[in-house]
Structure formats: C-alpha cells, structure tokens
Image 1 (cartoon, rainbow, N blue to C red):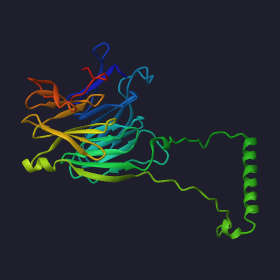
Image 2: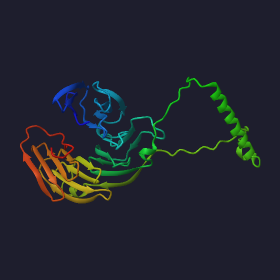
Image 3: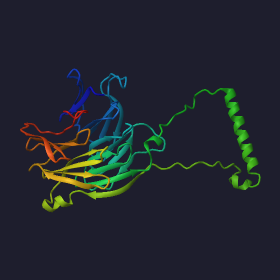
Image 4: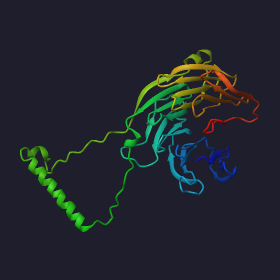
Length: 338
C-alpha cells in the first residue's frame, strides 16, 4: 500500500517497517528462516515462505481496515519440500508457489466453485522462479537446471466464483416454503405432461423423474511446451546452474542468471534469445526488472557488484563495485528512479 516494507533475517525475525516514519512498527518471530516475501498486487496481503509453510498475512492500513500486526489470513502447508518462491495472480486471489521438491503449486485464497489446488510437476530440479502471465492464470516455471515450462489453465479467473453457504438452521418463512413446494409440484406436473409420449425416457427404474444437470468443467493445467535454456552454456561448463530469474509480465521478457556470471534475456512465448552477456567471474545471485521492463538490475554477491543494464541499447546505466555485505535481493521503486 505504498508505506509498508516487510523484511526478515536468518534468525527468523520478521520486521514490518513504515516507509513514512522510517521506523519498525511490528515484529514477528518465526522458528525458522523465511526464504521469500511478496505483497499481493492490491496491497492487502503479503505471503512469506518458511520451509514447507506459506503464511498469508493481512497488511495493516486503510486499504484493509485492519491495524493489528501480522494477522494471519491463511496458512498453506505441504510436507514435500521447502518453499522458495511466491507469485500472485493479477486479481490477488491465487498464488503460485515454487518448491525445492521440483514442483510448483497453485493455491486459491478463498473457497471457490470448480477450483482445487493444482500441482505443476514434471521438473527435474528445484524451482528458482515461477510466475503467472499478465491478466491470466497461465503460468511459467523455471528450475535450477535451466528448464522452462509453460502451462495453460483450463479456466479464466473471472469464471471462478467464491462459494456461498446457506445455514441449515436458518429460519424459513412458512408461506414462502409452501409456495416453493407448490412451484416444485407444478414443475413435476409439467415434466409429466411434456413426457407423456415417452415416459420411460424421463424416469429411472424406481419411477423417479430424471433431472438433467449440466456437467461442471474440471479445473486443470495443460503443459504447453518445455524449453532448455542452458544447452549452449553447458558446452562451456557442464556444472553451470541457474541461480536467479525474473519475468516481466507485460512485455513477456524473461531474464535468467547463472553461476558462471552470465545472464540471458529471452522473449516469450517463443523463448527466442534476445542476447546474452557474461558480466562477472562470480555467480549472479539476484536479478530484477524495472516497472517498464527496459532496465535489468543484477547483483553479484561474490564480487560485491551492482549492475543496471539497458537491454535495448545494450549499455550499462550503472556499474559499481564495493558492497561489503552479500546482496540477496534487488527491486525497483514503482517509478523506477530508485
């Protein structure tokens, strides 16, 4: 919501920081080290990966009307593998979670009609990054061995509605109940009159009238294509690993970074290589696009390097070295100036 920052350390201590007052306003203690944090697009929620758990918290502020600290909305638990990455759908109702067990999983934050959590499997290494497409539930998954998989969802997000519950003990008006009963009798009578010429086709063996029901479509994902991004890099170094990735949804650009100090830029859906560059002898640990998708920030912890690369003109916007501490994450401000 423009005024909150959530950060964690190795001891599991998580801080909520006000960017207006520049002070820590809340503190939360996990038993284990959090690995990934991300706010929802509407700013009302944020998710935190802690080993095999995914915690969804409400963000305090005027948007949510909630001012208590670290109020839990949902907890997702999967016993298989540590969670490494979270991405939110455009409407903030679904999350895509990557794991070290070589799979990604789609969760819904609410109970939705015709929806179930779905596992995107078939990868052969730990998931480094995953992302929904822009204004869609279609997804891409990138693993540590350079495998990119594109998935197509069978449903649109706007077709998945939240379930409404009616209590069994809710009082019903007597007259309304009698009216509904009369309407039901009229419907049965009309059915009998319409089926006078072929009664056997409209009744089962017990004589009960057969009511036609529309079949509900199943929710599933279809694997469209699989690409291998490291074929050329493996010719030079067979031990190369994909260390970081970032996907810009609007421009459909994917940047991947590797343990050899190289990075590559691909354009989806054809996964065509725009260009590749080797910037260091050390592994590139983190990458990030600016909001417009023109600049790519790269962090090299081993050499203390911070680079900003403009891919269209193929030149450095900023290049500096000398960070004393390890850079674990990079991101841009909403206007791209910082």
